Length: 107
Picture 1 (tube, rainbow, N blue to C red):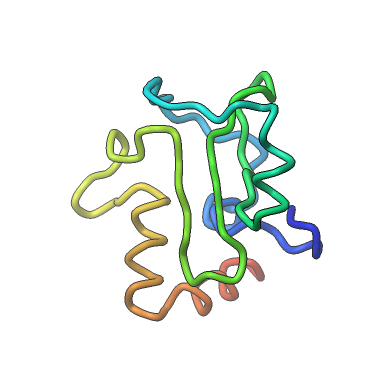
Picture 2: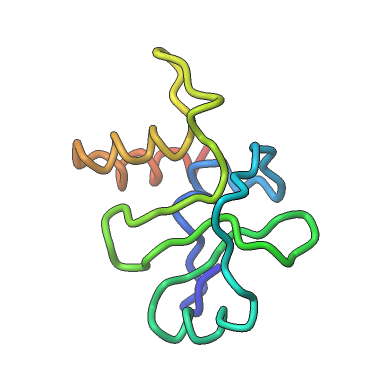
């Protein structure tokens, strides 16, 4: 949830799930010391691992689809069933993300 009370795009795309199981990518991590400074700069780290220590999802509020994930969404993607982050990207690129989210938020 963002400072204005809105919910992140990926949380909404994952149907407001409290837990998402994805394979973590171990290459880069965000130093927890800098999380507050990153948030103050506008980038929101909206998803963490099960320990709450490691940042997994970042979003830039106000952007049509500025989403970054630390996990491997490609592992769950299939030609006719793309992973949630990729599906959101395609929806945003087609200009249909807002309508999709609005329809599925009500469901």
